[in-house]
Length: 182
Image (cartoon, rainbow, N blue to C red; front, top):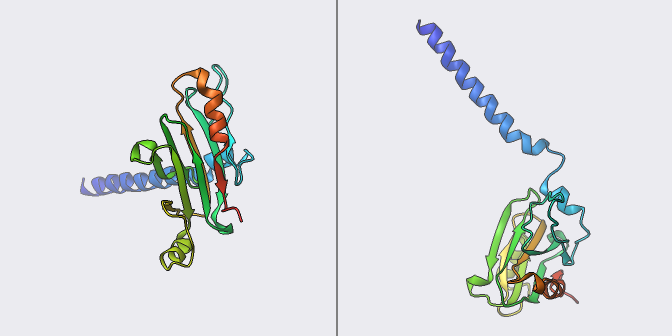
């Protein structure tokens, strides 16, 4: 009886361990990830306006059709990246995603930033140089440290009316994203 109970407990524990290993390994084995989907867009060091989501059409990135999206990819191995521009006086948000598709930083205009977007994105080594004052930055720059070098920046704007969408897209198109211009 005790021997059977020990075998049963051992089987349940071993099954649980195998189950956890398989569940945790599946994302690493996936061929199609958020990063591979985003990498298809030509958004390296520039703000790319994503096409609006059309009703009844595929939506692989699961975008909200009411929002305007701008995507920028930066590689911090080439140096710090900067996001700079004036956004409309409506709700907007900025999110930084790592290569696995996880949000590593996010902010909105409700955080007291207003319409002006000035963000510097640095990796750990660049942040150390910044702390030693070996890198110059503009006053008022929001400094964000990224855990990895390959970052995707997603800016979301919420136009109050669909008729304002083209104006919001134009404003988002003027946002600079990438290394500091020389």
